[in-house]
Each structure stands twice: as C-alpha cells, then as structure tokens.
Length: 146
Image (cartoon, rainbow, N blue to C red):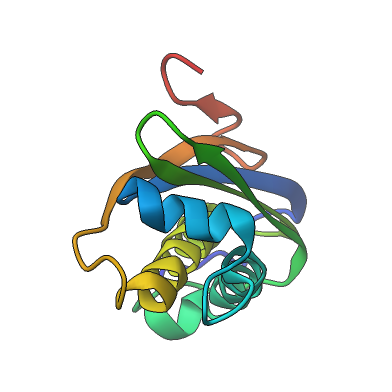
C-alpha cells in the first residue's frame, strides 16, 4: 500500500456514474414497481452504499477510509432504454474516494442486473467512470464535457 501517513486530512468528494441498458419491458417493470422481486432501485441503492463501504475489502491495496456520506441516485433513460446511476461519496481523510464512488455505481448496477436477469439476460453495464473529484494534493478534476 502507498503510505498516506504524512498527508493532511482534507474533505474529499468523488462522483462516478454509469448505466445499465435493457429491454424496454424490463425498464417499464422497474419504473412501475411491478417487478416480482420488489423495489429494484431501493435495493440497488442500499447495495451501492454497502459496496462503497466495502471497497477496501474488494480492491487489493485500496485504503480503508471513513466515509462521511454516500448518495446513490437513479434516473430512467426511456430512449436508450436504461437506468442511469450516479454515486457521490464524501470523506474527511488522507486519500480520495474515487474507488468508493466507482464501486458504488458498479455494485448498484450489478444489483439491478441480478434482480432483473430472469426477465432480461442481455442487459449491459456501460460508460462507468469518474465524473469529478475534489480535494487532496492533486486538487480538483472533472471529466471532459461535464
């Protein structure tokens, strides 16, 4: 692991996003709340938050950091059709929260896949990436086009 012991504690924020594309019928069942397994997005939100908290257990050499906030949001994209996911993670620490934000998005989307796979095995997760980050020695960063 990289030594972060000499770094100052600062407020750090990371935002990641991505989407899961699916058949229109699958999206409609999620939108209506009529999916037989229950509240797909509610369960995916909890999974994303839990994923952010467990990132250091999943990614080798990733520091365990104290998270002060994890927000997981969803939006429907009817024209694709897809569910868009955005995770915002905050910490007061010595290293950033980018990995936690990315993990939150991926785990939330994987949960949607798991809950809907009986109806639509062809779903694909796409465009998962870091949107922006702030804090720390490297300062602020934002993905082009944001």
